[in-house]
Length: 174
Length: 123
Image (cartoon, rainbow over all chains, first blue to last red):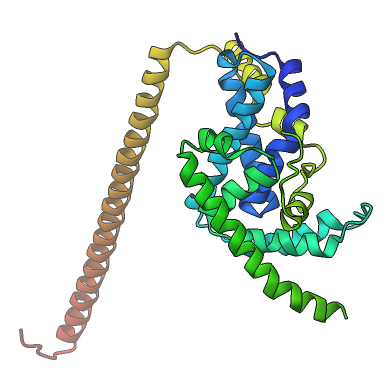
């Protein structure tokens, strides 16, 4: 059964934030992230008859968004570090949540973009999508041990980089 | 999404806060719906194809016809060019012949006048 136009628009509006955020955090580039996110939704429409439930749609979208973003990184030999600062500043402008250091968060996002793809993907799925390691393993088609290892090393690397650059950040702010 | 994990370290909690989802640029859904490969746009294209129908066999023939027309145009263009070149060569030859005839007549006239004047002109 094909998805009707209205229903399709409803699905886009319900899941665009998740799909776009996954693509953006993996690619680090607004334009490419939007392109990938659009492709994911059109792919959803073409596969519509196989999607049974809301949970299935969400799982499908997250998985396809992740894989299409990885494809885009590899295909275009993208270096997300170069575009990271621009959108991070845009995203955090005027973002004054209670007790949240937006400068620190912006730094963490920039550091995330410097992680190798194999570590960045599980880190994004763990800390943005709040998936558990076994859920990430299923989504990526990897073993749980491999995902845990990438997560562990990714987090360790991120923390080490943060320890170095945050000191610089503190010095800059002072 | 799962419930916040109490076992997260402070660094991980900071990371989770830093990685909140973000909204796509304004008008994202409209742009998806407006893409040429979007379902509604593709459907409109199919409707247009029905308004101007062309059978599949005819489509194949149309391609062949276009190619044949191009080849024929090239052939006739080349032939026309050669014909023009031939015509220009013939015209030049006629002009040369006329010029030679005039020259011969002039020389003969001069020779006759010299002869009448008693001047011998050797051949």
